[in-house]
Image (cartoon, rainbow, N blue to C red; front, side, top):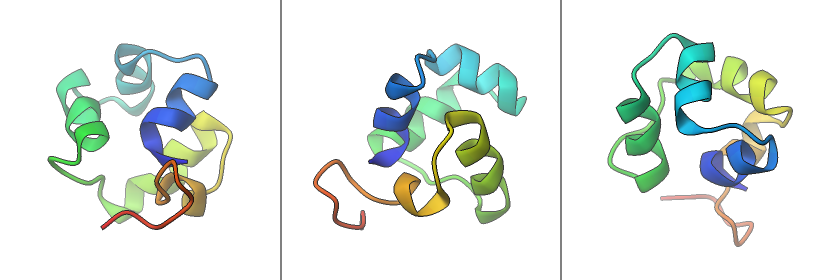
Length: 67
């Protein structure tokens, strides 16, 4: 699913997700464009906010792992 798809499905903007995670919106944008990746320790919090699993966050829209 990926972070962007999960965020959109949850009905959140990049700004709202960033506020909930207490990070800068540009960080979320970098995750979504593949310019950087979230730290492993923040993945469970992202998954909780987006109501999905960590595994779903790490998968692309085609169901294959990103990378």
